[in-house]
Length: 241
Ligand SMILES: C[S@@+](CC[C@H](N)C(=O)[O-])C[C@H]1O[C@@H](n2cnc3c(N)ncnc32)[C@H](O)[C@@H]1O
Image (tube, rainbow, N blue to C red; front, side, top):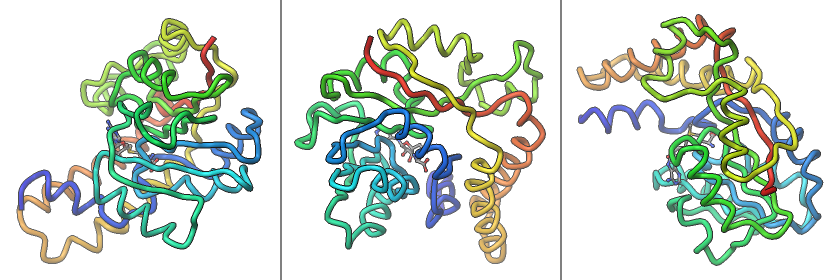
């Protein structure tokens, strides 16, 4: 097994691939006040952990869910196989504007915008929004001006902003912030809890590469519990200014 295969073996069959909870979706969609037939894109949807909560706010709306990792998109598709309002397929969120379902009233992007970079990603998403459309995204932030080395190491080299720096990035992208909310510890546990259960289930019989991936994932969850007062995700609702 290669390192990449081992990584995705750990991350297979999880309900979600990053921190989040239905209350995050509820907060953003109440604030966004979408039309009942809204077109929503879940960009970087993972296995589709947020889709049910998104659908609940738009009784006649539709969700296009896309993820660059095809098995995640397929998991989301299988999860909503009986739901005609959901289309889930592999794809690059950098190309949202070219999707037949575009433009969107809301682009929901939980824990994935940093793959494009905040400024670049928001500029890209703008081309895929309807007039008046909004973007909701969660982004790593430091919650202190003086994060410890442990907190910096948690993000493994990513240039994690403070909340003020994130607001400046959003402003430079030409967006106004409509609201922010810290992603709760319970939302993080919704990610790490099932992952830790999978780690334990895979331990027996794991080869060296898988054991390394299991150890790294377990260490990540433990590290988050050490640094969670210093860093986390900020959920942001923003619209082009
Ligand atoms: C931290 S996970 C979050 C997944 C999901 N939103 C959730 O909360 O469960 C980030 C996801 O973004 C996806 N991703 C990264 N770059 C992408 C891109 N350019 N286009 C689409 N998806 C991407 C990854 O494959 C991964 O599933």
